[in-house]
Length: 382
Image (tube, rainbow, N blue to C red; front, side, top):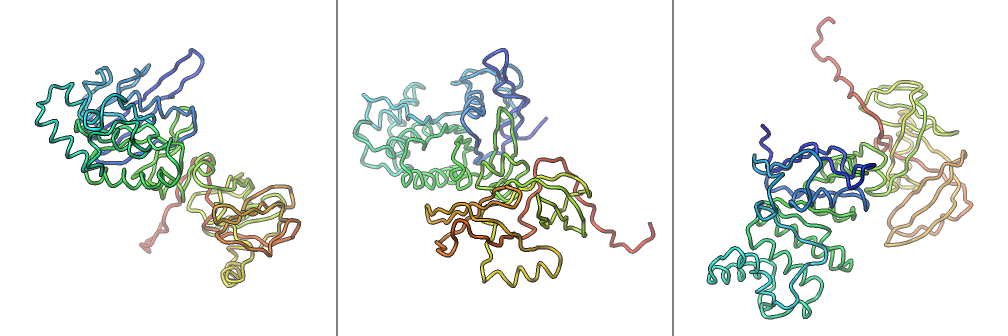
């Protein structure tokens, strides 16, 4: 028996006879965790949320909450509440009545409802808004009312279905901080779904990256961003270049990988073999363009056999959101993107330029791997 607070066991769901929306997913969530389901539209994240809420039934598999199988329970029989993207506020009710509606349905005494509504208004920082109707509120205020209404019932799990999607960028970032503050203060398990990688990274304890009804990778924001397991995760979360090449030499923990007409050095703790085809992910910010302040690092890497200059042609450059992005073409036609904060006017389309990356910033993806065994330090005979 699992001791997880919330557990999804081998959930499968299809809406047609030809295709599964969920293909046997499994997930364990601890009490008080902030877990985000991250993926493109149609990947199955909303279906997963609806199954947890009891709004959808799986074809097979089960949902367990605090050691109890809740798969067949009605939504109102689960200690779970949902916050939707469209707020779902009652337009004819004021803020106080909207927040207290669930308590009223449960026949909670009026005095207790009034007290709880006051607590919720203070929690979401909307004191003084009790008498306003939804039409008199901003988008951010409506979202806070929806969250307060969901929290008023003291749910064990709060499900949030892209709740910030309709807000402008600045307000969305403010609400990200507010939601995280609320979650930590209350200690409630949050399951949040979004297609916005920035939201997922900024808010989550763990991220579940979904793709075509399956979990590509589950991990902390650091693990997902800096140690992606698949090329899909590497490119969906952040900007990564995917390079394919063949191992031509191995020097300890460094593999020399031939990519087209060039050879790059890659640090890896995985077991790789000469002749093996590898797929590498290198973040665009880790592609360096012959910056003078990096020369000592490059010279040191070259002396150790762990790095080298490579050459490419600048195809395009653009500047957006404080970042310079440079599109490069290698001699075999492979394209990659380098990015950095700040403008560099010296880089021009058509220019031949040196590029390189730290061998530790190339991540091997899309393969099952075995970690190298640590060296035997005992000194004994084998």
